[in-house]
Image 1 (cartoon, rainbow, N blue to C red):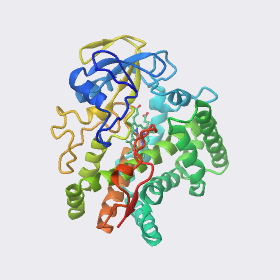
Image 2: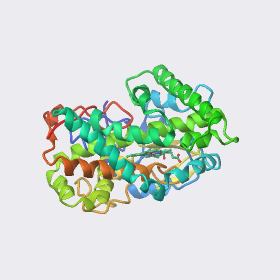
Image 3: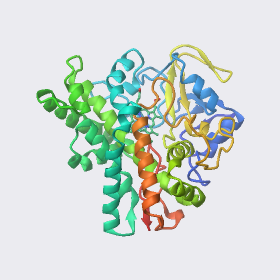
Image 4: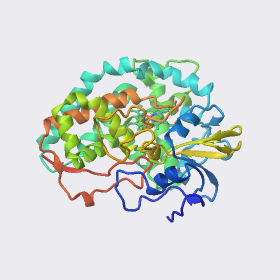
Length: 403
Ligand code: HEM
């Protein structure tokens, strides 16, 4: 895809052509430095605003004049598949695509399960799960695929335990989730995969309504005020967000550490650095590279530009997380820096609900991996690693490693 100079219109998604695969597309970085609030053209010919500076994004994502409702005219979809995912066959959406008060009503039902205190109680169990998958990978022997053997199963099993989904069904939901997040599938395939998962979770909710249990889906199903569809769609959001994101951060984070051996050694020598290493990796890699989308309900100003009601806005958190104004070490990876102001989990009322869980999973997985496998290395040339430039969530398709 051709990118013209910002200032004139350019197209999104911007191609990740050449350059460092850990960096956001150069066009977004250029836009941030030269025209941080600019008009861009989307695949369907429609136009929206692209916002790339850290400060502008933090301010705007707190502004209630911006809506997350994807059925409002002007909502910017970065691909046709995103549009297909906006609502299901019955026209329902999940709360990530709702505004308050409806959004808050549903999100509040889940907050007790994702509080920091609650997720900290899971740490010993997550450590066991991490050690168990690592034992199995070591027993199988090198080379191993770190994605299939370690990064993907850990958050998949954890989210299954929390939701009350049978982990034996992991191939079923991982495959459908892959179809939903792939850019090269058709909108029809995406809708079919989503509907399969909704049917599956709807059946599970019905079973749990009859025999309530203490799992998240069990507790939601026991609420008379929630419809069947609402429980299924909340379960779907949690199931997909709960495993795809953390899995990709684990694998891509490992690769970034392998490419920065000084940083890897620092984490291995001082495991107390794990929390700050995870924040810095979240900032540096920003796996939600397609950004966060909103549409204006009323006129508002962003970074000195007037955004009119009905206009779409894309917040490129990947470019903002490299903004030298917020992070003076910008394009370097430095796990000793304080990166906690990053926007990798979004910002405002929709800021990631699962972030405490993702943090514990990533801290345990990465610290354990570098401690137990001091000789960890790539088993193929770096140039041969297949990056997920074709997926909604960035990462690597496989990561062959030896130790
Ligand atoms: C929302 C990123 C892990 C559940 C978000 C948003 C981002 C994000 C950027 C904001 C979307 C928006 O504003 O439109 C990430 C990253 C993760 C991660 C980078 C891991 C490294 C998780 C996990 C879960 C989860 C483990 C669940 C167990 C959610 C939910 C929302 C959300 C439910 C919607 C919140 C709302 O609309 O109020 N996430 N996420 N995420 N995430 Fe995560």
